[in-house]
Every structure is written in structure tokens, then in C-alpha cells.
Amino acid sequence: SNAFIRTLIENLGFEKNDLKKTLYSLIQEKEEDYFVEPKAKDWGEPIKQRAAPWAKRIQILFVVKNLVQKFKQEREKFLSRFSQISDPGEKDKVMPLKKAFDNWDNLLCFLPYQIFVGQRPCMWWTRKQDIDLMKGTYKHGYANYPQMRQDPKLSFSKIDKASEFYLQENPYFPVADTITRRLKKLVQAIVRSESGGTLYFNQVSNMKESTLLSKEEKETILKVVCQAPLPEKEKKVDYDG
Image 1: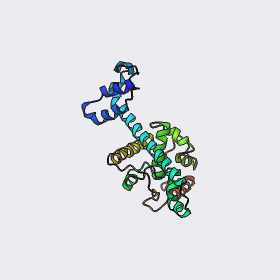
Image 2 (image 1 turned 120 degrees about the vertical axis):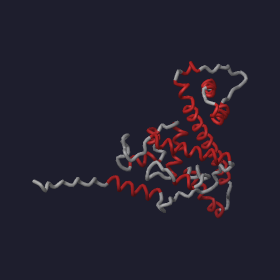
Image 3 (image 1 turned 90 degrees about the vertical axis):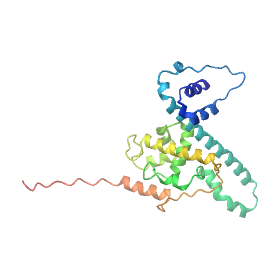
Image 4 (image 1 turned 90 degrees about the horizontal axis):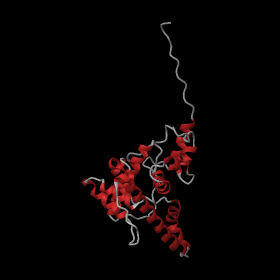
């Protein structure tokens, strides 16, 4: 893997310095490790043309991995402190945060609200789907959306089963390119927040949308619309005949 990363770095242009720095940080070696010289021919001809997109995919996976691992660490710390609280009144005060940690609702609570509003992949997409997109990428890998849609622990499977969404050619489910653009947008926002030192999770995330409809209300409306029968085509009247 280290040889592959080095090969990517060698095939990146000078303008990709930030991307190169990220890749260098991923190289982990010990003194006793055998050094494998990076050679482009070992990875096939496409690596020269695909070095940049492949490197960006690795960068995205690196950011998502760090995000989830940091969240898990903070979650364990909070649950440890929560278990030591003996006062019922104090427990009630922090109970909303505990529920948020339990449901992962605060995974992206450090991002500004505007990030979630603009350029949503589809009409029913909420912050919950953004969170599950992070979780799904961490669990299933980059752009493995079919596996995410079938994962019962992610909200996508519930939306699929709400009507005929389970079909792969479902026109109501956003296409892979649209979801990937959303993933890249979120990752860019996460990187900016992390560089600014604002990566925190000890806040109850507001799951209400700007329409004042909750995620459950939107899902109900979507289910009714999708299960309604299509209107019959109007018959054309031939006035000349």
C-alpha cells in the first residue's frame, strides 16, 4: 500500500501539493519493513491518467475515517462520564446529548446549517442522510451506494422499502454521481472545520429542516406521493372526425 501511495504522489502534478501532503501523511512504515520502490508499471498504464482521482478518493476515505474515529472516541468519553452521574436532575439535563450520541445525530453538528440546505441530492434528503452517507462510506467504502441502500442500519434502506425505491433504476433515488458530489461537499466542509479547530460533537444537533417539517414528516409525505396511482392519460378528441 505504501508503494502504491508513493506511485500516486510521483504521478501527481506540481499543483497538487496539498493532496501530496495528505498522501505522505498516510504512509506508515517501521524500520524493519521492506522498502518497495514505487514503479508506475506495477500498477498499469491507467495510473498516469488516474493518479489525481484515485488520490482524491483516498483523501476522502482518510477524512471520513478520522471523523468517525474521533466521534467514537468522544462518544466513549461522554458515555463514561454519563455513567458516573448519580443526580437524576443532572442526568436529565444531558439526556438529549446522550440520545444524540446513541443515534449518531451529532456526527456533523459542527458544520454550519447552510451546508445541509443547499444542493441536496433530492427532495427527501435531510441531515440524517448526510450522516448515514458518512457512516456508509466508513463501513462500505467509497461510492458503494448499492451496499449502503441495502444496509438495514442506514436510513437509505428504510426509504427504499417505503415504496418502489428498492429497484436499482429507481428514478426517485439520486444517481451515484449526485451522491458523490454531496459526499465531496461534506468532506470539504469537514476539512475546513477541522483546520479551524471546530471539530466537536458535544452539541445536540437540530434535525428540523427549514420547511419546519421533521424527517419523519417528510418521509410520510414522500410515501403518500409515491404510492398514489398515476393519473390516466387524457384521451385526445378528434374534432375533425
